[in-house]
Amino acid sequence: SQQEKYVLVELEVPPIKANQERMIAGVAVIYRNMDTDIMERFSSMITATFTESPQQVEENTNTVVMTAAAEQLAVETNKLAVELRDKGKIKEAQRVLLDNAHFLAEEAAKYGAKSLEKLKDINLDDAENLEEENWVKQRKSMRRQQYKWQNQQTY
Image 1 (cartoon, rainbow, N blue to C red):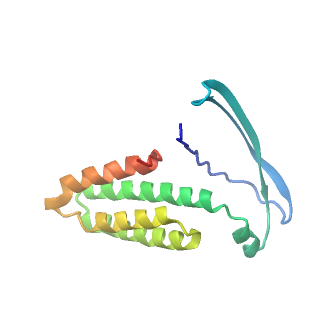
Image 2 (cartoon, helix red, strand yellow):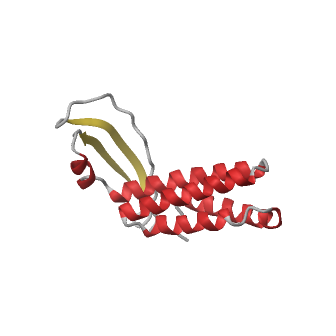
């Protein structure tokens, strides 16, 4: 299988002095290899290096992870827009979607991520189709897109 899924975990760690490295998490996964039909294991320890240097943070940022995080944040925000629109709060829902598109444009530029650019365009389109005559069809489209992005479907 060519399918790959990820799990995002946000951790809050206590303040640590700069230039120190700490183990902050451990991961253990057991899965069935689709090619060999054998159960396999993977484990890893996650460390973080602490710094006061914004340049060092930028140089060591994992753009793949940050892109995935931005995608999932955008999906949650898009869900909020649907909730607002369901309550009849069209202008508020539109503002949420436009703000989301702005966030996605910034993140797309920062990380060079075409997926974020695509999500930005989707949110702009969503913001234009919240009126009553479009809402039933648009809501279905939004929920389908949310499901696709939330479940990391590439098809």
